[in-house]
Picture 1 (cartoon, rainbow, N blue to C red):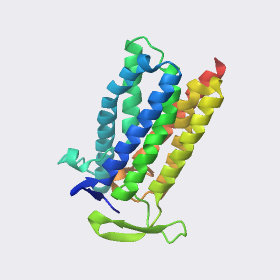
Picture 2: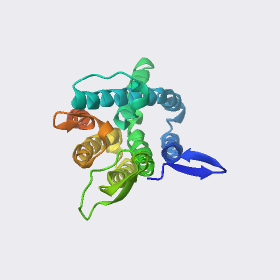
Picture 3: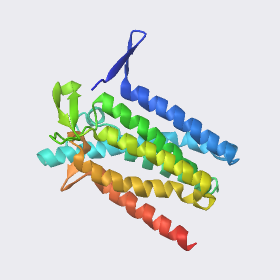
Picture 4: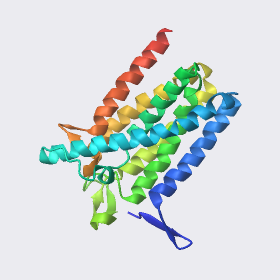
Length: 250
């Protein structure tokens, strides 16, 4: 919609700006929580190194999503310019980050669950900023609709304007609410601190599964009746649910 903003004569991608601000704010919150819980020195290096998992996972899932979309349209796996044609998938970055961090903790013989609660607070905050960036950047847009919930939305690269569901804003609002809810849960219920991340993932997977039905962008990848992210949501839902059940029994 407004993919670039001019700052001192330079065109800056709005998505990059929003994501950067979100990363800074979320990291500040994460550092604060780690300091308060006296875990900063113990885990901050592991978190920073795990950022590489965000890049690898996000791009890997973006490639898989694009390949699924190509196959659904043409029945072929098209590898030409796949790195340029594929985007960056939040789920991929999230899973890549968490898996990398868990592996590092395991290698260092440090309990991942001990600090995982803080991640359940900072991750939705970062994602909220990212979805605002998606709205202005013109990606991850909603389906065309005449519903009162739809708004005029311009896809700049296609010079296309229609009434569409502003799914990016829906998700940004949801993530801000999850940030507040997870923060209050972490602060007020100490016995839930090791479960905050799983509670967030469990709740987000449900929300993401259903809001995907309102998505209208082609690059998200459709295979069968569901999108790539919906299949991932089902997986995240099952894993987080099993973890929460296991924690209740311990």
